Length: 540
Image (cartoon, rainbow, N blue to C red; front, side, top):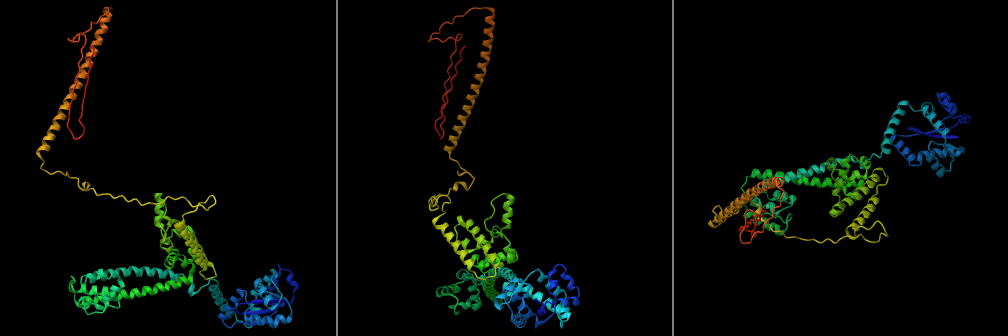
């Protein structure tokens, strides 16, 4: 039995001298307590040393990927194949590759693991010719290199560069806006008409840098920067401009500011191209789904691509709208439907009615793309293209054909009412603008007379009401007195009094009193005629 041991210094191949002791697995560690005991179990036959750390890293990475290095292949062909003995390896995957390519029988068991542990503990005594200091340096260098490889530490896979690039891009946009606004306002005192004719900021600054003073526009050639029609308009406006005269020193400072704006704009374009390339290298699927700017802002907001991959789809959907979310939770209102993902092209081209649905579906697919980019070994954007095609098909279904029914066969379309725009033309009412009376201060005589008549009629009406109330009170008092007199008469005399009928011609005040008061008051107002009729009937 031969043992293949791969150390940071090199490959070693050693035969087992006493195989009987391998049967006791629990007590095998006692045989490696000292170098002398270890040499009685295992004896070094061949040792292939690495030249430097890079060679060691290449050999170990090949073993991790299940490949055989050239040095290892030479060792196995020379020694193990000639001896026709089985080979003990620490990795079962490596044993399968050796058996497939070199046709050698390999063994991997708990006994082999104990043997490897014992050899590692007594490596200095079993491998002669290697100093302990050199062994420690090789171990440290290989550990660092192997850790970088395991973590896939590469200049092309660093998301910190994306975070810094997108932050710088936002800062450049703010500074450019401030500089251009200052430049337009400053030069506007000298040539105010130019700002309305040329709307593009970069072209505006280039024209200023090329011409300078307003007087030079007549002889300047701006065909490289402007179309012929715009150039003719600028020259015509320069001749009749209303701007003030400025000195040469002022023009020099304005031109220096224009130079700064042009340089920053060019650097901004270069930085944007750098960000595009970096996003396609680190997160190609995310770039296909939401674009490089939105993807970079999501990564910058989360801190790194790995942190972003740990978020759920609902978190990615509202990432960037934290203030609105907590404000909605506090006030018990509707939570926001989207955050940074709102600026993606798929959400932007959707109608307002379907923005919430598309943002939710886009967030779900984007999370899959983020995790594939963060943890997957493949760097292609095929998955992102496929998911984007699905989302676009879903968007067309929502926009064109409508939402299908969930129940039933699923073939019938949902019944939706046809939208008809009903425009109502409303005229403006100027009467509500002022609270002052619309009539003039000097009123006409007719209006004054009408008002006096109305006040007199109101006064008469109030007097009549007072008289009616007094008469009602008198009637009540008279009725009470009559009832009291009747009671007394009934007690004294128990006689019936016959009432004689009254003649229609002569009314009798003692037997019956009939008073009819008919009052009609006509009040002429803006509305209908008011009739008041009052009837009173008194009976003894």
